[in-house]
Image (cartoon, rainbow, N blue to C red; front, side, top):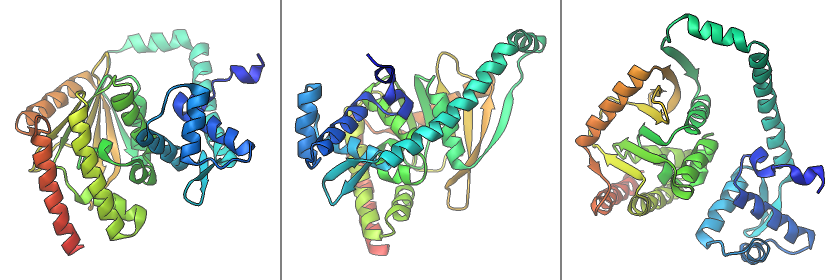
Length: 323
């Protein structure tokens, strides 16, 4: 086996094994001068890797790979590998790895000094301002890797979005991690406290499509997704609280509960940054407040999800009249 074959390419590229196998399938078809249509991809994937891939999952994975610039598409249905996009991602991840490597070396060189300083004083809360929403969600993604439960107050649950709007606003990695951990691996319990404000997904979709009709259609799809996932996944808990609740946080909980993030927003309520707090006391108190508010909310469960989503669909019809 060559050294090249020992490389864990999916891990380096930041994608799943299934997504990497789809890339190999597309490349194989293209190299044989065949059109890599969804049907051909489905057939070739089944022969090479065994088992069937559901059409809905196939199209979702292809869309993710398109948004990451790992695939291109000619016309409506002929996919090809985007070599330049793959190289660009590898270069970015190489730079990130180089920075981590410096930290490893520094800690290795000064490990005794590090522990000496760490034990000289009692632990103090760490408060850090994070500028920009992309940096904020990148930091949350890092914390999420160690978490088994995530508590989120949100204008609208991100996991109900299709991938495109979230990728467009620069939160693709965060979104993909939530979907993978909650719906595929199912090792993450996800709690949302939300007013289900349709202005939020509509605004994101309008920025993406610049077309009100397409944005409204996207919102219809998002509502269908919301109803479906709350019926399907027991580790997803969506609590609907109509009135403002005065709490705007994300709390990741792993073996320890010591971190929380507070959001900073502009006049349109879009996230523009946040405050990171590392404090066990603060995290526990914030979680307690979150759960207390959930007691006064309606969980989208046991038929409630259909009733609430129908109410939102009625609101969406009014959007069509006024937008």
